[in-house]
Structures are given as C-alpha cells and as structure tokens.
Image (cartoon, rainbow, N blue to C red; front, side):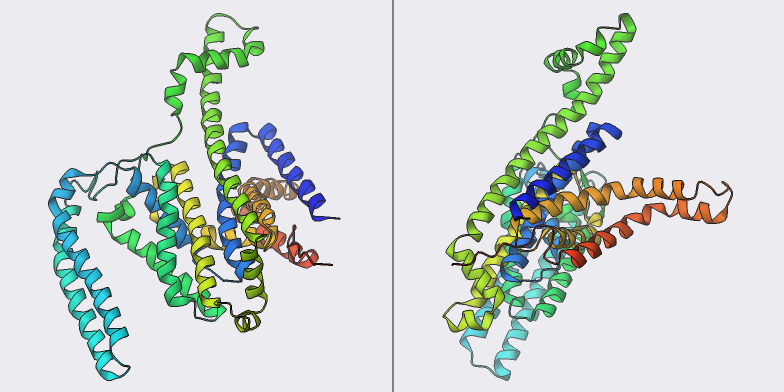
Length: 456
C-alpha cells in the first residue's frame, strides 16, 4: 500500500470517528476535540522538524509551549498603569545591569586568554552584576506585586489583539531556543534531552513564581478573543434569524412558548458551535500554512542537507557542512512552531495557567503523536496529532464503558467492581501504551513512515 493510500485511509478514519462522536455525544464536543487536534498537530510538526529533520531530541516541549502561552498574556492584556508607575523605572535599571553582566562576561571570555585570571574575572563580573541586578529588581518587583494583587499585581501587556501573540509567541520561543541552542546543542543526544527537560522546568518555575510578569499561580483569566462571545451571538438578531432558518423544520411543529423555548435552546447550542467553528477556521489556516512551508522546506536542498546531517553527522561535516549551525537553525525553527501552538492554545482556553504545563501533556503526548504518526513525515505528524489527541480524550469515557460492561455480571456492591469503576479514568494511559506498542511492533516507522526518494 502506498503512502498516499495510507494517508487517505487514515484521515478518512479520523473523519468517521469525529462524526461518530458528533452523533453519539454532541457536535460541540466533536468540534472541541477538532480544535485541540489542530493545535496538537502544530506542536507535533514543531517536534517533527527538530527530530524528523535533524534528529534533535528536544524533551522540553512544554517550556516552549508555555512561552507561547505567556506571549498571549503579554500581548493581549491591557497594561496596568499603576504597576508601571510603581516599579517600571527600577525594573528597567535592573534589566540594564543584567544585560551589562552578560555583555561584560562574554567580552571577558573572548578577550582574555584561558586560565585562572579569566575565570576569576568572569566570576567577579557575574557576582557583582547579579548583586546590582537584585538590588534594583527586588524593590521593583515588590512594588509591582503590591498593586491590587487580587486583581492585577503584574505589569499587564500591550493591549493588542491576541492574534498578534501567535506571531510574538513564535519569536519569543525562537529567541529562547537560540540561547539554549548556543549552550546545549554541542551535547550528545541523551545529554541534550536532559538539558532541554531541565531548562523547560526552569521556564515553568519562573512563570509560577514571578508574579510581576504573569501573575504566577494566581493565573491570568479573561483573555481577549479573536472570535465572538457566545452571549453576544445569542443577543444578535442576525444569528437568531440564522438559527431559526436552520432549524425551521423542527420549529415548524411547535407554537407559542414551546417554540420560543426551543429556539432559545437552539441559539445557545448554535452559538457554542459557531464559536468553535471560528476557532477551527483560524487554527486550520495556521496548520495549513505551517504544513505547506514544512513540506516545501523538507523537499528543498536545505531539507536534503538536514536529512544528510541527521543520518551521518561525520560524513556531512567532512563534506564541509556546519553541523552545529544547522542544528541551531532547526532547533530554533521547531521551537518557534511550538511557541505558536502554545499561544493558540492559551487563546482557545481564554486563560494562562502555569501549573497546567506538565511533561505528560506537553512533552510525552506530543512525542507519541510524532512517533505514531510517522517521524520525518509531516502528514504523519498531523495524523498523529489528530489520532492521539482523539484517543486521549475519548479513552476515559470508553474505558468507563468497557469496565462497566465487563463487570456488569458482578453485584453493584462488589469491591472489585467498585475499584475498577473508580479507576477507569486511568484507562487512557493503558490505551496510549497499547497504541504505541502496536504501532512500534507492526509499523516501526509510524502509520505514515518517512518517504525516502531515491534517484534511479
């Protein structure tokens, strides 16, 4: 079976499953799953760019997703004027000292010859620079966080439309990835994985504790939206007329108060579906653009060079390729894509909650999407994003049903039956492991494995 046929069959199965969910549960649930599938597919593409193209083992996916989410806050939230007046000046001075410390220590490293004097010089610069930074930073942070901490307690953002944060999130994640890459990309694959995981934990810890930046664990809620609010739609005459026309068949059999109540319920349900369709359109547009660019890059001379470096770094280096530089390029690009997805996810949620960024959800699950879909195949990553997220969401209700059905012959008071039903939600981990095991056993390259084009 060709890869094209596999692709058509696989995505047809996804469409059928989403249709079954729509009919069995609700179309609102199905559309909610589709939106998260689209975002997951973008994240999977970012990881596939790093691993599938260049063999870089980035286990810090959640950190870059969180940077994208933070960007949504810093771009869309209105600035808190009182907080800026209270501590912005001292914060700016602290930033200057911090940047000065980096510049001076870098200059000392480059200008002075290797030896004890250089080590002592760098240590002295770092200690003095950080002391001065903290001297100005601590009172500034205390002043900012004291401004109505129950409501604000942070600087706020730029007050721009939240769609801009998708672009800014990519740039922020790319910038941090460049810094990480300059430090860690010289490490061996396993050490790189440990380094990226550790750095992502540091990023999350900073977001949890620096209230002046993102309110920390107090969370930022009520973020602006690029789509209408359900309440606004429910009060709009054009939307009510649209739903009335759409449901004319069901409403024609009713009259009076029954018709009014039914129309009201249809409008409420329709507003939720309409909003999710709007989100789906935005997310699908971003996914299609990134997918097209990824495919074009992979099939270009640059993409062939990256695969050559992935397959044999020594041979590629011997042919004059700057392996470290190319690794840095691909690491930055992949992280930028993950940052965009992180900003999209925070936009969909309407809030930024640093404590929700866990390795299981934002690293392990994304890696499973890439592996199951097909490492090195862009369409495989998209398929993995849809399939794995769909299974992850539906595994719990399906698991509960299976446990209840399998133990239906037992008495309701049976302790084993009660224990199994109470723990049925953990079936999603079983399903994830089962899917991963089956794919690796019968199709080690993934459902849609990488296509190797040979010149004949």
